[in-house]
Image (cartoon, rainbow, N blue to C red; front, side):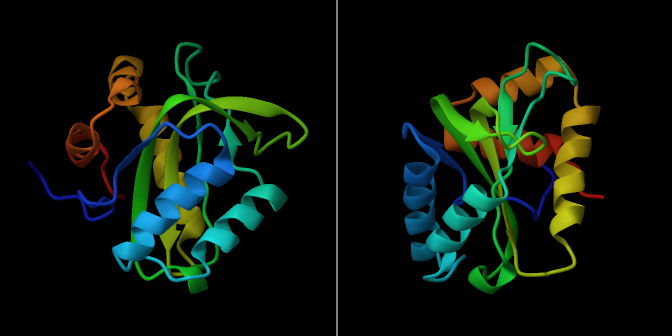
Length: 162
């Protein structure tokens, strides 16, 4: 299996939370315990999501795909550069990045941790390229996985870093 340093096996999560704030708290606590973020991360990511929503409608890629979100916050709250995948057991309502007055049912998060202020857009572009260039059937496989080790393995093998 090829190494992909945008993902870490211990920073992949599955959540049964039913709202973004609970998801962020659950994941933030785990990331803090791993020393991947600092004490301000939860408030930072929660406030940023409310001001600048990150829900993405994937229907232009394929109608069969669930929507995703790419929550992130300022680098001052982060100790590393990683994409933290979070599979959601049930759809959770996130505001649409493009049309913030609309809500989207989201099933998967690509949470961006980035302590390099120049790199946020670059990582987002890599996620979008992954979605655009990966076959719909492979993406469906990913979005249906519910075990962290299988999610990590899939992304390590299929997400190429530009």
